[in-house]
Amino acid sequence: MVEGATAQAPEGAAGEEPLPRQFGKYTLLRRLAAGGMAELYLALHRSVASFEKLVVIKRILPSMNQDRAFIEMLLHEARIAATLSHPNIVQIFDVGQHDGCYFIAMEHIHGEDVRSIVRAMRRKSVAEFPLEHALTICLGMCAGLAYAHEKRDLEGGVLDIVHRDISPQNVVVTFTGDVKIVDFGVAKSVQAGDEAEDGKLLKGKAPYMSPEQARGDAIDWRSDIFAVGVVLFELTTGRRLFKGSSEYETLHMITERDYPRPVELKPGYPPALDAIVMKALAKRREDRYQSAREMQGELEAFIREERVAASQVGLSSWMRFLFEEKLDQQKAVLQDIKQLADVLSAEHPTPDEEQMGSGAGMIAGSGVSPAPAPRRSSTGIAIAAVSVLAVVAASVLYLRAGQPTRGDADPGRAPGGTGQRDAPGDVAQAAPAPTRGSLEITTDPPGCSIWISGDLQQEVTPTRIDNLPLGRELELKLTREGLEPHREKIVLTATEASRTITRKMALGSVTIALKVTPRAAVWVDGVPWKGDPDRIEGITAGEEHKIVLAADGYVPKTLTINARPGETRSIEERLFKLPPGAR
Image: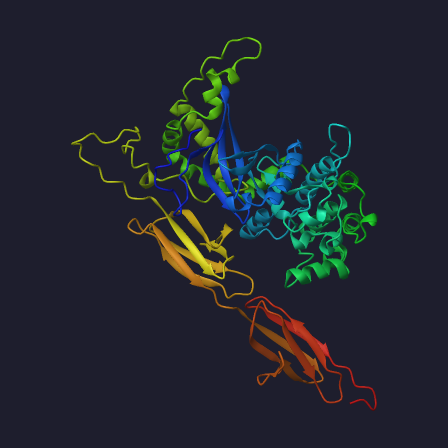
């Protein structure tokens, strides 16, 4: 087993291992994301005969490796997910352990998730999600789920696999127009029998939970169908279906309130599609589609009857229109391919390559070991590097950290990239000035969205944004629901290419415009409002406030308000008279 350049200085934060590095039979190229349970890496799988494949490695954090119940559950479910092989499901290739850390290796996708697509629409000022593309996406979701729900084991028994986390973040559209469901690694086989215990560790996103999932009841495949209905509702109406001021309120909306019909919200909404959406959203699962295949069939019938131009080619063209700027950014990183090629070509052979001459690598039955694989040339690595950069620049796990700039080159290499150190007596050459910069951004509280010169970043705080231009004024905006937006202008220079920014975010405020008949006194959170009774200003956003309206001879009314920062909420209320003799 070879560890890649463990003596080098870490590439990222202190204590981080350098990249690229060997991880069993995979070469970890870049860290894409980190969460509470795992880290995601872009990796290269190199095997015999110069076989290469880009994958994503989900590496379970060491802290979670100590939780045996979690690991056993994760591996059990990942093995089930690894049996799924369908064009609309991201493939899991491998589940294993290396250096005491469990990992899952999965397919890497060149595309964007649906949430990112909606954000790109806003940037392009596209007002509505085209119906034909919304239907193409939901058809792909239904096809993938139908396959998973009907998957059988080797003995012919249905596995009863339920995804449990269908949401816009977990549906990816590639730049060739394919639709893929991701994160089937957290899917559940109902046959496992530990649904209640599992729910404590892995659960769906509240706005896309079915009523039974929101209540904590046992779920089956029809819970996924409900989630598809929510996604279809939102894409075709342009409105969120379940969005409360808190997770509790969102779950309450799902389980207790009536759902609006698309035809009530959007003029001209097709009645036949409205019926499909509402059947998928039936509160009783017995009233929903009884299979994803059934829902897929009704969507296909609607497309035929209404002559909707839904197609993979059309979806591909639309994706390239939405993300043309991001795709163009691939060209800007090509200058760094040579450096990545030098780094990778200096790596030792992978374990698979080392076994080529051993008994384990002999051709079965021949008694003859295969010839050693040819040494990987810089040209071959460069081709792989081109693929890496082209995919990363616009992938679903889009990596804003560009490949290492010349200023980040291995200090043990000559500036020309030959891999040789300066000979004694040579004149040391000055390191070239950096060409790109970075921002390390931390906020209190964390979880703020980051905008740089109008471009919404995928990451939230705390994080590091790399590959930023030097010598240009950048407008940084930090936002989070319930907080006042923070704006500032930053210029990165060659002498200060990396900066650390720590900002304490201020609580946001809202304005309530009141129109009460008859005119009434106003209390806010139990305190009489002494300002203009028609306009309440300066109350904190993102928190629940009680507003009481009272007038002599009328029944008092209590309102519960929770608004976004900067929002002006208009409220009209009419008080009712007290019955005769009442106080």
